[in-house]
Each structure stands twice: as C-alpha cells, then as structure tokens.
Image (cartoon, rainbow over all chains, first blue to last red; front, side, top):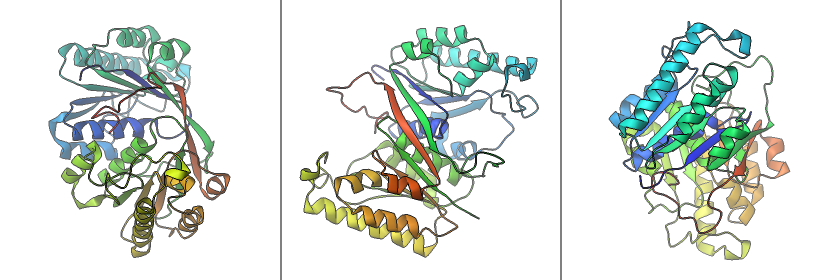
Length: 179
Length: 179
C-alpha cells in the first residue's frame, strides 16, 4: 500500500472486532495481505473467524497467544497473571516482526487497547508500535478505553457507542454471533 | 438459530458495513447461513467483499440491485431517481423473500437505513420488515440516521461515532480499505 494510516475502533459498543474482521476480509478480496493478531483471546477457542480463515488462503493470517488456561476473563488489573503478560509480550513481538518484515499491508491488533489498559502489555510498547509504523502499512487497533495519547497518534478514531443493549446481565455469548 | 434479535449499526463513523461483514464471516465460520443485501451499492462495482465471497461457498450470499448508472451518489432527497426506487424495492422484495423462505439464519440489510432516510424505500416498509422478522432469524441493519421508531423496534443499537477523521474533504476511497 502506498500510504497506510492508523485506525482505532474503541468504545463499549459492539462491532469493534467485527469491523476489523470485515476490513481484513475486504482487503484480502482486493489482493492485500493482512495479519490479525488477537490480544487476550485464547488460541484453543474456536471462533467463527478462525474457522473461516482456513478457507481464505495465506493472505489472511489470524494468530493468538496463550490458551484458555491463560485467558481467564481478565476484567480488572489485579486479575492479570504472569501467563497473560507473557502471552501479551509474545503478541507484541509478533506484531513488531510483522511490521519490520514488511510482508503485510494491513496489521490488525485486536483488543490491544484493552491489553494496554489492563496492564497485560505496557502502554509505552503500544505507543512505540504506533510510532514505528512503516508508511506502507495500515495499522488497525481495537479495544475499549483508548487513551488520549493513543488517539493523538491515530489518524482515524471511531467510537462504537452502546445506545441500546438487550442483555446487560447474565448474557451468554452466542455461537456464530458473538464468537 | 433458536432466537435471533435485531441489531442496528448507525452513526456517521466508519465501521458499520465492515462490522456487518465481519459478523457475516464469523457466522458462516460457525456453520450458519447468511444473506447480505446491499442497498444503494451498484452490482457492477467490484468491492473487496464481493471478490472474497466467491471463495466462501454458498453459505454467504451477497446481493445488490441496480448498477452504477442507477446509484449516482444519492446524498440528498432530490437526487433520488425512479431507477433508485426500483432497485430499492427489488432489494426489499428480496429481503422479504429471504425471511419467509426461512433459509437464512442471518439477514444483513446493509445501508437500508440510509435508503429509508433518503426516500429510496419507504420507512414503513423497513418497519414492517422489522416487525415480521421470524424468531429464528438474526436481522442486522446498517446506515447512518436510524430513527427513534427503528431503534425502538431493535434489540441492540450501536452508534459508530466519528471521533477523529483525517480526510474530511477531497478524500478518495482507497481500494482494499474503503471498498
């Protein structure tokens, strides 16, 4: 790509990861190469996106670090374990490699913003990835709670805002819809 | 699907169509059947999503009505032509058929909200589609400017809010990213 920008999808509403996924699908449709790294999602959990990726060939890579033993729903800072931090830093390293190797047009760092907010990775590391983005790469980052510092460095920021939600409590994610 | 809900993605920010597309991809990954009807998008324009759909088999249908002669960027009500209205009502008919036939789990009506706002279709027709949704179908509608009436009938509403945008004027959509 000639000139890629940095896009952030944040906010508490639905559609952040799915928008990044849709973007990835559209891009490979047009012949671009995409790598989507999912932070804070276990590699042994079969999501719909993982199942479909196999059909799409080598232009779309989808990777996770850590398994479901690692990712036990971290929602508060004190829940963060050494295992999560290890998986987080592996994901970061992989992201840096993707960028420096120059073999992707679009790099999606899914939930990296949440990972930074919870302390799974350091915010400074996220910021340094943003700053070192090669011109030819489009960088997409998702996750609720983007900070001012992150948004300053991004070119395009969209907030997914929850206007109406049917199942605030006791809602079980539905196969095929939420994962 | 046991019990589908109605989801709306609205607002002026990026990510509405891509979120719907990501949702569609995830769903077919989990073995569901999806039909995505694009309102106000010409069928002779090769978007990334159209190119990739061919690889994904018959579980994902992606359809448009009207060609690029029909859809000459309608942005105001007075731009709406008879051709657009014809394409819009064909799309509506197809949507109704999809629902009554019962052969889809997820029905995505992309940009149908814009179509209703511009008068390409009647809002009442959109409302009647929402009201007649079979229990087993998940209905996804996108487009800026969802009305209170639409949101009342929806179960889940997310607003894509533009926080920061790099190219307000003179921006050309980029192949592989915006289409």
